[in-house]
Length: 413
Ligand SMILES: [Zn+2]
Image 1 (cartoon, rainbow, N blue to C red):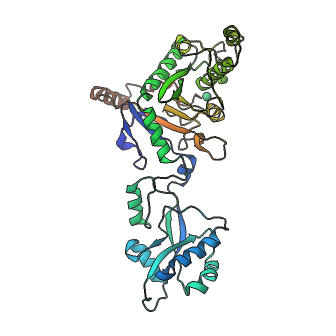
Image 2 (spheres, protein in one colour; image 1 turned 135 degrees about the horizontal axis):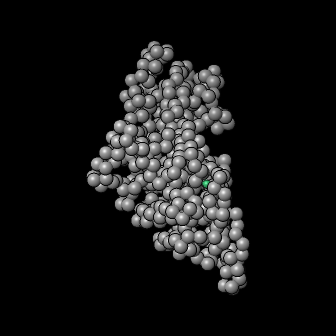
C-alpha cells in the first residue's frame, strides 16, 4: 500500500543497509536496483574444503581453470577465498569436523577454502580435478551471501554469521557507490529548490484544471552550475473530455521531454522567426507547449545540445513516473531522476514496489541512470504534533488520512 508514511518516515525506520546521507534540504535515498531486490537476501550454497597451506595457491589455480569455463559461476569476490580455522564461524568448523577424514594433523597445517557454488560444479568433478595434486580432500557445504555487502558493518556481521567477508565499496548489482555519492554531493545544494518548483507547477496544474497535481523540472548542470530548462505540469485534461482517463501522452514527464525536444530542434532552426514559428506551429499530442506562466518562465527558445536528447540532464518529479514515462526517461537518456512520492501501484522506477520494474537500472535495457527518492527535511515539532493529532483522529474515524498532494495511488503519473 502507498501511504504518506512511506514518504515521511524518519531516518531510523529506513533500511539500515543503505547509506543514507543526511543532507541540508532533505535526504536522498538511492533506489534499490531490480537485481539488488531479487538477490539482496539470497544465499548460495558453496563447497568448502581444507587444503594444506603450502598447496593453497595451486588449489586456487586449479579451481579457477575449471570454473572459468563453467556456467553457474558467480562473482564471490566479497568472500575471502581462504580462511584460517580461527577466522571462520563455529558452524563451519563443526561442518568440517563432521566430514573430515584427517587422522593426524597435517604438517604445516591446513586452511579452509571456498571451492565453488554447488550449482557450478559437481563434487565428483572436484575430486577428479583436485585429488591428483592435493591428495584426499573432505568437502562440505555452507550457505554464504550471494551479494557483496553494502557497508563495513554488514561485512563484519556476515563474517561472524557465514564466512570472512570483505567490504570493497562496490556493488555488482547497481551503480558504483562512488558515482552515487559524487552525484549526491553535486545535487545536495539545490535539490530542495527543484522539488519545490516541481511541487508548485503540480499545484498550478491542478488549480487551473489542466491536469492532476503532478509536476516535473528538467535541470541542466554545467560546470557545477544548475539551471532549469523545462518545467512541466500534468496536462491530461487539457482539451480532453473529463469522462475519460485523460490524455496519457500529456503526463508531466512526457511534456517536459517534448519541451526539451522543442528547444533542441529550435536551436537548429535558422533565425529567431523560424524558431518561433516552429514553437507556435500546431499543438502536439504530447502537449509540450508551455501552458502555465511558470512553464513559460523557464522555457528557453533554444538549447544547444549534443548526443541523445536528455543526455546529462536531471529530472526532478513530485511523483514516481509511470511505466510509460519511465521508459521515456530511459530512451531519452536522462542521467539522473529524483522523485518525492512513491507510486507503488503504477510507478516504473522502484524495484521494490508492487510492480517491481526498477527500470532505471536494467542491464537488458540499453541505458541505465541514477534514481533517488527524496525525503523532505524532518518536520518541525509543531507539525509532528499536528500529524499525531491527525493520526489519532483517523484512528477514531473522524478524519480521512492525509494524501499529501497525490490524488490517488492508482493514478499513472
Ligand atoms: Zn507517465
